[in-house]
Length: 348
Ligand SMILES: NC(=O)C1=CN([C@@H]2O[C@H](COP(=O)(O)OP(=O)(O)OC[C@H]3O[C@@H](n4cnc5c(N)ncnc54)[C@H](O)[C@@H]3O)[C@@H](O)[C@H]2O)C=CC1
Ligand SMILES: CC(C)CC(=O)C(=O)O
Ligand SMILES: [Mg+2]
Image (cartoon, rainbow, N blue to C red; front, top):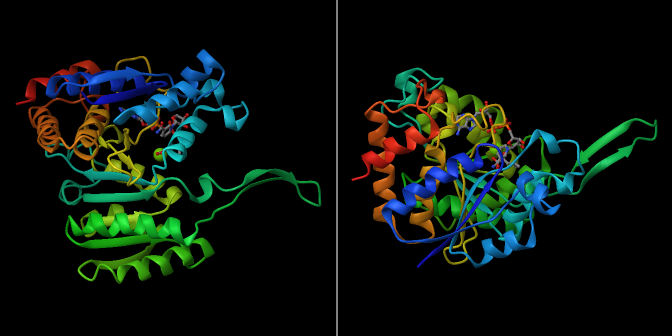
């Protein structure tokens, strides 16, 4: 029986993974093991990513991750903060490819920040590099010669890192509408110039894919002007992080966007909503569980080869929404559990 590791984390993480687990239990037979991560793990063990949690992630068939982050730990040493656990697990498992689909579910036009006719056009897969860039470069604080405090974070990619994520971008485009837009800031950044050069080199292996390039500032604008122009976006860690949160509001809510983080080694993967621990609503039963439920569907599709069950879950979320189920972020009043129950009821 497949082993699914559940790492609930902090804030709304446990609230949404609980509901995603119920949906998984309905569609198949799995063994689940849970382990603490983030602030919850720090409280229990003194470290945000305990060895036992990492070991569970390694030996499981797939990981379902909630969210980490807790204002209580914002001032402690960075390597012990909840966020270090998430970056650490991505790096340790070599999960360099983060797939973030943003699509509007019919009925959510009113929840989108865009006009309905524009909102309806969004159907983009953001392929975000996840183990490099400025998040993992050398960082620190120092004093300038004039004695001023200075912070620095090194943005860097090597050509192998760019090539492998570019290939994921092209392969993803081959399975969709064969349009890939590489987003960078090559007019200013050397890191981006290398990115663009390597993406162009890799494109020679994918003559059927139409490749375009866009600067990230323009991409942010185009995402709200005409999101339908995008099929697949491939971009670095920082730009992908920001653009995917933005895309979520084109599609109705950050509570709707799932993700898959893949290593390309067998079926290994970690699945998580794109949102964080949402301290402002944590513990109130208000969180939308759909992003976590849809992440569970991606887990079935990408790690367990259960595409039919993944389709069933996605169809159930779509039906629950067309039947009118809405949490507060979507303009409704259902609790986290009631929303999940609407999805369970819609499961064929
Ligand atoms: N993957 C992860 O675990 C991530 C962790 N974080 C961490 O989470 C903490 C909070 O960060 P924020 O910037 O506030 O981002 P956030 O994504 O946690 O919340 C942003 C806003 O979206 C709302 N929201 C998020 N998920 C929702 C859901 N499922 N249903 C309804 N509303 C939802 C929140 O209530 C909040 O108003 C920080 O400690 C941050 O470092 C942030 C992003 C991702
Ligand atoms: C700790 C952050 C890098 C998490 C985040 O914002 C994300 O992965 O979307
Ligand atoms: Mg983010």
